[in-house]
Length: 520
Image (tube, rainbow, N blue to C red; front, top):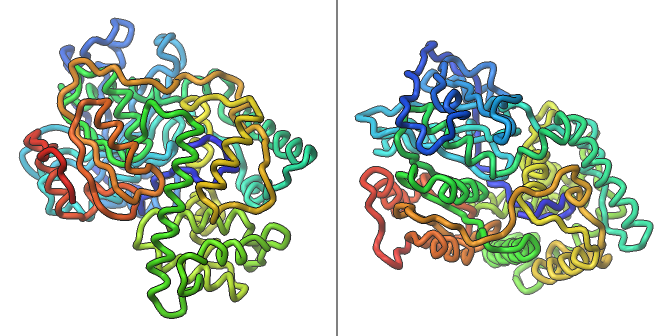
């Protein structure tokens, strides 16, 4: 998941979320007992021992969808207090938004979930998953708990880089000029983006503590505040990075980890970006082959020509964006809208309609798909998902300041995903992270997880955003079990696939792992 904003292969696990204001009765959890602190230092005990005050979710809603979904009285919300800087536990604090759906039966504990991104809301994920789990033994036996990682959604301080007006400009700007002037223009904009993030988010002191290194520590405090001796967790996409970091830091506190749509912790930023581009090309090719079998496919009946046809339809938008009412569909929007639709096969019919519309001079559907990706509401308000993506990635990923490396990445990325190649040549411009005010807090490495209990990694053969091999490698690194799902989509657990959900449920409830080589 590259931090480069001009890369079109950003891996945001955008599940169909709906969220909103809950009218739950006010309640207070019991304080976490001292034995829940694990190996916490004395300076952190006040955080581990805190009580969570549960109540209505109205004040936690940050999007229109949140305001609708949180209205269900089965959800209640609280705020968890954590140190902003764990090196200074007596200094400023951060507040983490938490949403809970109580277990409907005999409770084992809490099941914490994270949807990925980085930057996606875990609070919003719970209502999204909830409807499909109404009769599931998982929600009978566990409180389903989602949290907004530090900097994200309803958590504070919140990462903020662009105004809604700035977003309109950002989306209409296309960086495809490989000349020195084009590179200088893109780098100036990326430097300004980093400066705006610093100013609007509360300064460098905030940004340097937004990485997964700190989120994993927050997760352990949340575990204790919920009253759980051990952590039970399902992480999707980037959420697997949180789970892996937690496994390194707190292996003795793990009960069960399900990591779906994995990031390989040993992989370099450049290699991950290139492989992700290849994953989206694979998904595009699968879509094109399916489309070719249907009447009126906008990419034609020969899948081998689909990439060229897509390029012919989208590249003219570089010089002439398409008017859509009082807005425009830019070249970047068309690519992003397509990528959004490649996350799951259920979106493929909409992609065909969108591409057909583009061919006929109608950009409404592709623009709407891009709006979903960018977190733009119908009223024109943007969530901070993509801003948080950049800020967190700048702390988690390798800092690239060599333009030759950027050029190589761009060249390899275009070769891996030609349907996204603009045809103008390599643009070797440094990304916003090259201008970030603080250094990364993570580097690629083999996880050290001594004493970690058995874990379950799920990897999908046709996952566009987190390719299959990364899951194979993560399972090996954690010495855990691997479940292979054969399909073309991004993540699958607890989303209605009976074979997968039965295996996941058996593991979460009874700690029973599937047989070696298990496939669904």
